[in-house]
Length: 203
Image (tube, rainbow, N blue to C red; front, side):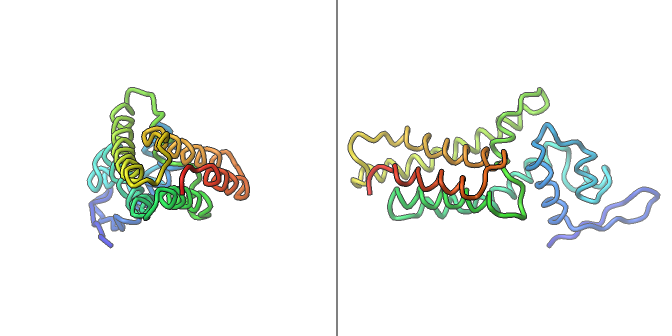
């Protein structure tokens, strides 16, 4: 872990772990969204002063981007693993299973950081919304390439549209996160996954 020593008020050094502080910031953004998070929320959760936050991470927007990087690296690692599944159905199983596990993990907030932040509408948050949507577009493109490959390999019936199927799977995954955030039980969430896989086209 990286440790950062920065000046605190009255000239006394303040020492804190950058990794721990960033993880704390991620939890706040994940819980409240970008627009709903204040600098006071962040400094209290991270255990740092505003000058220390600015010195270590930059402004709120820069901190959010670092938190989003951490979220994708630590919490969404299952997405990359899913794309390596030998069949399209295996991709769907790993994608939905990973999303379900994330929502059932009692140590993390419910919902999806990307979904929460992609609906930001204030002028301050427009660049954040654009960043989140760009990352989602990159994931969409990777999944589309995988499903186009699956169709070329005969993994889907001829009438199946890979683009439509990607959007369907994405909608189910996002809906899973939204319902988890609204208090759906583990059994209800598992039913969504099981029903989706029962309806899945092809082998």
